[in-house]
Every structure is written in C-alpha cells, then in structure tokens.
Image (cartoon, rainbow, N blue to C red; front, side, top):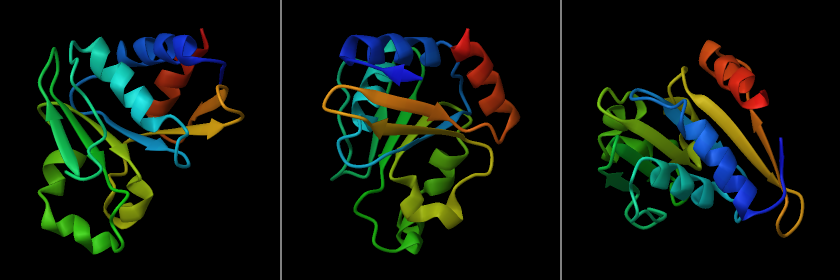
Length: 148
C-alpha cells in the first residue's frame, strides 16, 4: 500500500487499529524517520490515547485507553540479551493489551513467532510504502481486510 501523506497514514492507522485486539504484537520495521512512531501514535489515538511518544529513552511506555498499549522502542539495544533486563514476556505475549514494537530486529532471537510484521519504507519526504508480511494467519487476515 502506498501512503502519500499524514492524512492517509492516519486513515490507514485507523483501519488497521480497528482490527487489532488484545494479545496482538505489532512489529514496526523501517529505517529511522520512516514513520514507525507516527503510525504508533495514530494507532494510540484510535484507542483514545492522546499522550503517546516514542519510548526511546524509557524503552517501554504503557498507555491506558480503550485498550492497554505497550509501546517498546528497542533502538538502543546493542545486544539481544539486553531484553532480559526487562519483563519482556509481558510485552511479547500480552494477554491484557496490545504491543507495538519499534526496532524489534535488535532482539530478533526473543521475538514471538506469532506477531504482525509491518514494514514502512520511505519513498520520499511524505510518501511511504507499507507492507504487512503474509507469513501467519493473523497477517493474512489483516492483509485481506486492508486491501478491501
């Protein structure tokens, strides 16, 4: 899917968020400034969370809204084993909320098998290409819904 501006990103985020549920782990993949945090913020707003920001320095932010959202930014992890310093199972296998990961590739060995991998590729200053993997049943469901 090609997204041309912030308004289209918000529309995409709302459509995606309408299908997300407790227990889902959304892994946002993309280079710096691709729009991962922006997408996470729009998803949070959909769930009535107005105060969301990148947890780069805190590692984890927990937002309470219509659904609890665990937002993890793992950019600063140099070694995958650093994830052991936090209660990562709570976030990677949430039973009481939704998890949004940024820079999950930094802890690839610990990531759950059943998660939604969404890649954002920067085409130019405003335009993005968004792709959801098609490896799991959940990803296929989302792809089918989002393509209609």
